[in-house]
Amino acid sequence: MGLLNNIKDNFSKAEFSVAPNKKLKTLSADFKKSFGVNLVFYKGTQIADGDLTLNQLNQKTTKNVDTKADDLKIKASMKVGEAEKLFSDKFGVTVQIKDADGGNKKEYDKLTIGQLARGEGK
Image (cartoon, rainbow, N blue to C red; front, side, top):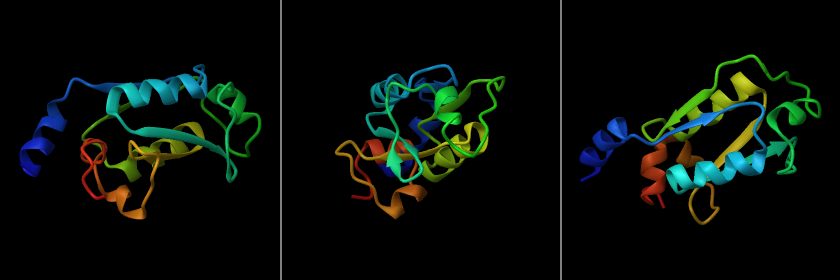
């Protein structure tokens, strides 16, 4: 069944767009609706204020956000670690993608977002 689910993830219509002008709490809520897992933004080692936008968070970090960058697209077929790295590379922010219960394990980085949403790897 795992292979079939992975194939379905590749053709899933669920796609998540990230724009630097959205509030972090909105991005997190939309991510949860799209994939059923949690997206948490960090400023340093602390969870970032959800009322900030990615642009505003940029002013509080050492990395620069490319505010003219195209929206980042995330799909269920992407690996958790790859998606987290894209946030860092494109927007200069640290994120963690956590399971539906808010848990996080290092092994999750090797799962796809769709696998994590289905509870695989727990």
